[in-house]
Amino acid sequence: MSYQLATREPVAPAPDARAGDVGFETVVGHSRPFREAVEFARKVAQRRLTTVLIVGETGTGKGLFARGIHYAGPHADQPFVAVNCTAIPGSLLESELFGHERGAFTDARARKRGLIELAGSGTLFLDEISELPLALQPKLLRALEERRFRRVGGVDEIPVAARIVAATNVSLEAAVADGRFREDLFYRLNVLRLRIPPLRERGEDVITLARLFIEEFAGEQGLPIPELADDAIHLLLSHRWPGNVRELKNVVQRAVVSAEGGVLRAADLSIVPRERDRIQTPTPGYTIGIPPDGRALDQIEAEAIRITLEITGGNKSQAARILGISRPTILRKIRRYRIAAPSRRAPDAEEGGS
Ligand SMILES: Nc1ncnc2c1ncn2[C@@H]1O[C@H](COP(=O)(O)OP(=O)(O)OP(=O)(O)O)[C@@H](O)[C@H]1O
Ligand SMILES: [Mg+2]
Image 1 (tube, rainbow, N blue to C red):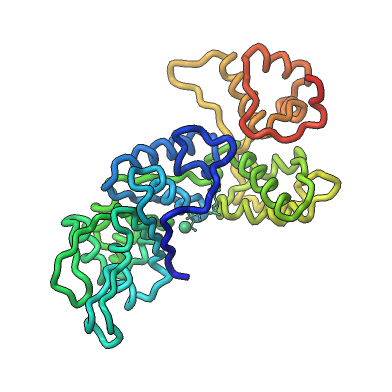
Image 2: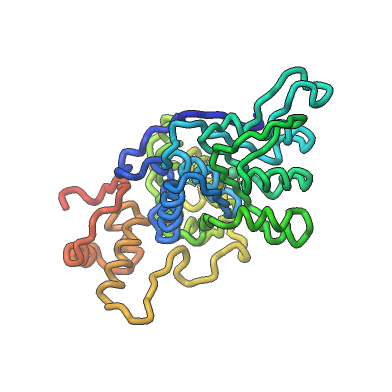
């Protein structure tokens, strides 16, 4: 199918969705760069007619954010129409997007409304916008600037009521430099630019997402939910994830099937740890920032424990091992710094009673 038309999404809010999360309840991640992207997307969602350009590597969740912006906005009850610019042949795309009048071309036996009209005052999501044929680009630019367009073969000016959200996983700047994308359209789209960070910049989110997908797939297959072994955590954090969340999802799906004895180990993860794909830092996967005006060592320690607990899904023994301290020590520090349990807890066999 080349495009989808939906007025409602069949998604149930996550159990820990907070009020105000509407539209983004299925978007998972606690890392700072990711939360910043969600916050920005939420603000953008409120400003209804603004065009948004979502940029990010393949598999980072641009599609999820486009839906999130629609469903978090004031016109969530209007249609969300997604069209992938690569999925429809260039020759058909114009009449798909803008519609046509009867007799506009040989096969045009009846008037047809285009996707931009079907979106009503909802959202038209133009995915892989870099692939929009050059010949169509001026027409989209005019629709964005004047908020009017004509159907193919038509003379009537039809107002554009929908918000346009475009996404790309390739550099539009490079496409402009190559003459494949019009500069004027690029500037028009690039006003509100939402960048979705790649997974390797999202630290402990890798583990949070891995646990989420483990639960999902194990549930689907009727398998017990395996624990993540230390070596699996390390490998997940050190991989570069060129395919981002989509790649993680696939890797986890296979691993859940191959895990034995209730433990998912590094050997179950079909990740090829190619040297050039590994993050070149001694503590891969996350960073703790120190602002120029300094920061108390206690605060840094508390943040390190919080991040590690997020990574281990709340398993304190595992967190203590990763940090190279004893279990009583970590328990003491958790109390001292009043560190709350992370939002998604993994079962922790050793925790009983504490
Ligand atoms: N934060 C997230 N929480 C939960 N699932 C996610 C998250 N980000 C991405 N996913 C899932 O990962 C997969 C890839 O996401 P999506 O299709 O939105 O990526 P994309 O950026 O549009 O990729 P492409 O550029 O290749 O089209 C989807 O199955 C999506 O549901
Ligand atoms: Mg996509």
